[in-house]
Image: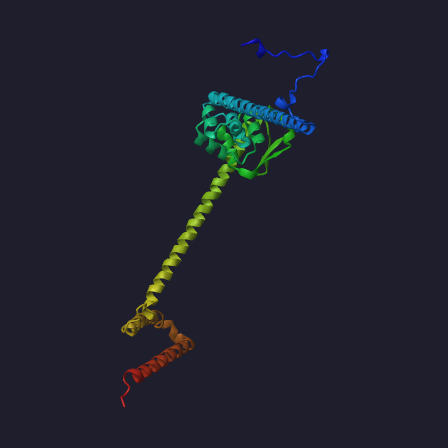
Length: 316
């Protein structure tokens, strides 16, 4: 390149005009320069906001991940210590599920159960069994060395289990707090653990007896209902000839046959009690029986007359 291609800028202190850079690299007016600077500031603010949001999201993600790992770690320790029967590990797992922290950490519930050493179905089943008991109450049961099975039996009593003065709990003994089961009150602490379990077993046994009694009464009621139902169905069958579905020409004959059956039963009944020798000394009873016979005979004769008029009428 020749020497003519090299451009040397003069020092501004030495006189002369500075090079006109505005037309090539910046805004040509004050307004354009202001807009240029404001756009640059907006873009810078946006970058800062995005960076802050990313940092916040990352911070929340890290915190949720840490809490989830801590909970799973506690579950693992409890599970290994008691072969998946540790009440505290189950309480921690339930607390994790209800908090939903694992979702923020990008984990599924099944993954948390597996990492904690639990089968998801078993964990869900046991958590549901213990649902009637609050987490704080379960924490106390765990502290007092109650097992999962024992806690489950307490949960079976539902709302009949109450806790008095929970704020005065003492882990070992002489606790001012008390557990109340079926109006029986026992100090709620570790030293009274066996007594509490005895009351729980007695309460469950009482409920089991009541349930069996109720089941027996229900079966007897159902049996009576079935007997009544069969009797009604039998009566319906007996009355069908009086109002058959097809109403054929032999309907009248079938009705008369049913009446004859009823008359046979009526006659047998008469012969069982009317020929009682003791009636000889009670003419007033005889008179009442004969009056009934007369009324029945008259009604029968009236029917026979109506039948003759209908069936044997002379044609004109």
